[in-house]
Image (tube, rainbow, N blue to C red; front, side, top):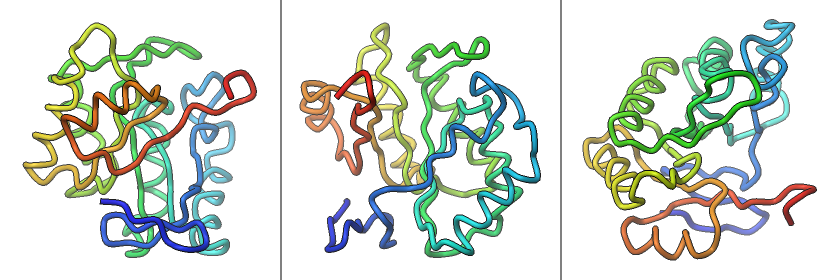
Amino acid sequence: MTLTLPGGAIEIAGKTVSRLGLGTMRLTGPGTWGDPDDREQALTVLRNAVHTFGITHIDTADAYGPHTVEHLINDALYPYPDHVLIATKVGFARPAPNMWAPHGHPVYLRACVEASLRRMRMERLELCYLHRIDPEVPLSEQLGTLAALRDEGKIAHIGLSKIAPEDFGRARKEITVAAVQNVLNIHDR
């Protein structure tokens, strides 16, 4: 469960973290694909964010690279400081640079969670978002898979990314939603 605290902080997974985290999508190569041009600089950005600037919330996804940023986070920050929340997202396939395809099949979601755990050397994902709702798979199956992984102890909290208000209403009838990443950008306000 999330609790909003004064000063823009939230409590989640037993940690008090800022509502805004370090977004890691751009720590990859062009097209959010492959390794960054300067791997050491990407590692330095992650280390400085946490150890110098006090960032307590890291936002990533298995689709960034794909897999690139989760490896970078592991290499830069493992063992993870107790006060840092690393949130990742699953459910987006990456067939090529700049290409994103929602993939919410239960087998795929389970594989994504298991692989993220291995890449980041974690026993549990503290906050795992469904990256996008796959229109080809019933939402109840997608959420049911994440809930089953939560019940198995592989996910602590479930979030939803880039969803419409009506999707949130449907989702919260099925699961406890710990966090939502709203759609907000220059083209969609």
